Length: 171
Image (cartoon, rainbow, N blue to C red; front, side, top):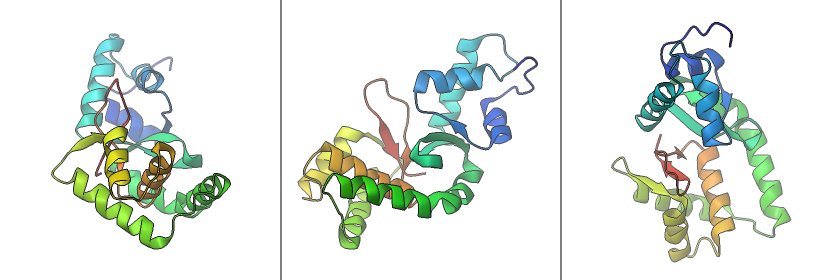
């Protein structure tokens, strides 16, 4: 932090490997303070651009929390975390009385893939509506869990930044 080495946000994220990214504003700050540029707003803008271009991916991985990762590390990190994350998801969904079977998860992945194909980045609300219309989720919380399953399997990641709602896209 005292002597930033990186001119681009991708360099910061590649060097870190994975960077906690729960809150979007704090995520931008965490990357910006590790960049050479003195203009934090410029660094934050560069991160948003790299993020929206898919050079940097934001997914629920380590401990099922949002993490920033360089695109090239997404699959290796998912491979390391999938078993534990699936156990965590099963625990959450069972606690709330929602136990999606393999057919439901497969149908969810199909619906999500159809919604997001062609480079689309859609809001959680839009995907929730699609999953409810397909009778796969009864409410927003169930839809969120189904999207988490899709994310854990590597089908989706956080989409383009939106101030209004979380978005999802195909990686």
